[in-house]
Image 1: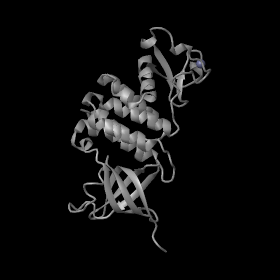
Image 2: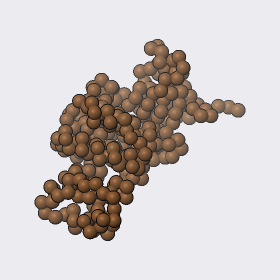
Image 3: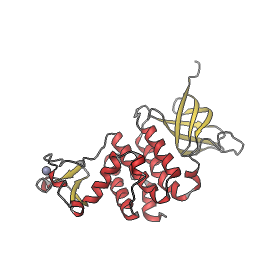
Image 4: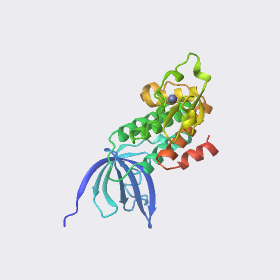
Length: 258
Ligand SMILES: [Zn+2]
């Protein structure tokens, strides 16, 4: 039987060592599906794969279908995103993005918004001010989980549909009940019926801004470090609840982050 080859543009999410010199690349294809492919000899310094198939890089690939793993035949660099590997701050902010994609995407399951969303976020992470990196990262994560089917309800009570309780004048310092399990904000009247955690309304407002604004707008936000970390902790809890993954790169950032 003739081997089946195909071409795809894909983002490298993870590299896993295989044998003496090979690498298994976990890739996000342009259609949002996940591919796992072996790059033979990729750990030899002389390999032309070595400088191309790096985490955060996007490549145009020629692959051969395999039974469990495909095989990389050719790789041409499309976008290197090199500064995500040379700057610690940028790397730290980009790592949860590829970790989420690696955990949450599946072989044949297409999700066409994920690749363009991720490439845009990584591109902003390459060039934004260092103070902005965690804001860009948070925006990507909450948008990506939403595209994967888990969008938090931030505008209306998930019990009764009321939006009034979020719109009081000067409500920024109010506390808002949020149910991670049931997926959204809860008004005071409905609160006894849900398992909730209380967040400052300002956090819910920022989350809403990250979810519904484009990256150009998001790059103009000025969030302090404490707010960025609170947002990422919220997102970590949301991902754990709905995707079932506890992102190691976020735990690392909370414990040892720059
Ligand atoms: Zn309600």
